[in-house]
Length: 88
Image 1 (cartoon, rainbow, N blue to C red):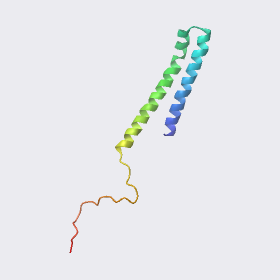
Image 2: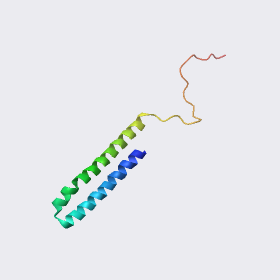
Image 3: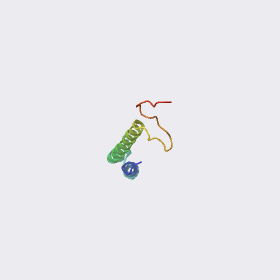
Image 4: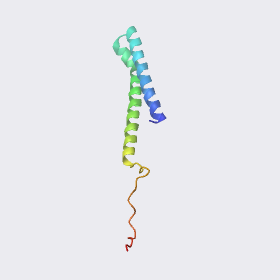
């Protein structure tokens, strides 16, 4: 996981916690609809960051599957086709 992915996931979790806090604080003073309406943008920002994290993760996994891993040390690979060796 790259630093960018860690930051995206952390921000998504942080904004979700902030949204829940705003929802609880505003709802105690007013009704639920007002609290949800005022903290809606924080929840949407959290969801957007989380979906961006998921998209980057899927793209990274697809890129890793597309490139074959390098051969391990000590493992012989097939020789390229070329001139045949003469036998005696």
